[in-house]
Length: 609
Ligand code: F6R
Image (cartoon, rainbow, N blue to C red; front, side, top):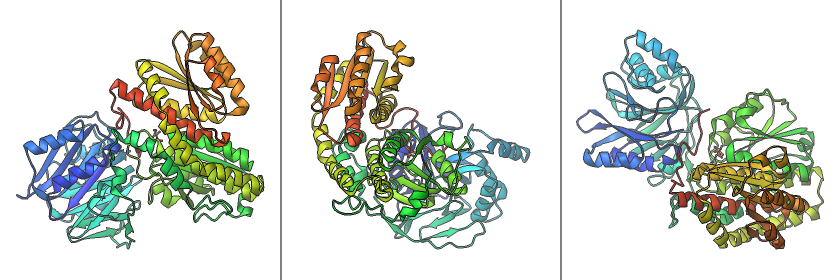
């Protein structure tokens, strides 16, 4: 993970680096630092442990003046969070500074090699080999030295490099970690993600793996490993910088939860229109091609994986194609059976998750066709997949995913309907009914968001719990898993999700007087079975909050509280049912005084394995 930025131009670099890092803190926030070539021609480095505001304070005490520099916000992998281990890292003579996102897998070998050559190491990081390697290869040209050094690296990296020997240039390169270049008049930027430059420019380049970029205030050159020039199209960002601001909400997470009606609508726009065929943007999948798919894998991590589980239910139910859902980190190492009749759907908000990318590359190598469902235009997943279906959630800043999940669900429904139409497993009339129900979702989501009292009260009464259980059957089980993950992530309360039917096979042993159970019961054909599960845990003393559809108010007789959702096509209920669970986690986290948007140990974009 980690976020990197770089600035070269006429303005004060430190100010712009800190502003950029503010927008990247979601990628890691255990330490931060900058390196600037100051107006006296010296390389000045300032690093702090902890949040970015510590760096801002440090810079107020000892400002750095200069027009070129690089910055970093860290999510520790190699070496504990500390001032010493934080980036930028420098070479022995203090002339070269490097920021790095990713993992250098062969750093031990390189470290030993460099130690033999007389280099000394002072940190526990993998990154420290990079400035020393560049130093070793430096023969008068920082670009040449960087290219030679990078050739020695194995692993993943986005690197930003400045050197006193070429004081007007930033060199940057990426492999398996995101990196963009922001273009402006008389100034240029590098960053791990667009929001870091959006206040300054809307014109960006997306770098590909093994592309080097050399920035000065006068221009940007992109080169391959042989220093051949590469031409690239400028991408003009159209979304609003405000989308990455809190807009009056206390936290990004709360704002993003409330954005769900809008983003659900946006993700359906132009794809789901009554009386017209479902449109999958530019994805061209013919009936013949769809008929040939003998297997669909949905592969993802975390919340996106939970969206994939819903995807499995709906694709199998509506289109009758067998679907396997896999956690990307498992899929890539289990030698899955893939051939040219396999379809892989990778789901990734960021489009940069290392395991998801690796799983996708594996499937492509074996001949599978890959559709990416991603939220980030220009992300690696979007560029490497055969086809892309964007979720239009807008920038998601809170580490815990909410609106991106909802839009991933919408994407799953769209794909399932498209397949069902082409395979003829649903009639046109049946498809129209589901489309109509989908189009009503945004209003229903608004309605759910207007009734938060039950959830707020339950959060107030139970924020001090140490364990909670989530139960559901069918689609509700998928929702329970996501609800449980949200709670763990932002409130640090231990929680587990179980399929209702599994309860008796072990987990019920954990239920004792006062144990909190959240029972999701939106599926009519499984409702009575869920009620039985609720009774089973109630009999053993559990405190139960049910999430059910209106019309099922009887459920209250068996539990301690209930949140009712507007009546909805049961197939689409996950989109509504997740909202109270997101809110519950949010209010519990607030009551506990946790850092909602930046929970401990987590980072938004997991670009390392
Ligand atoms: C949970 C969460 C993570 C991500 C996971 C995959 O709230 O955000 O579990 O869902 O790290 O990330 P993407 O979707 O970017 O591949």
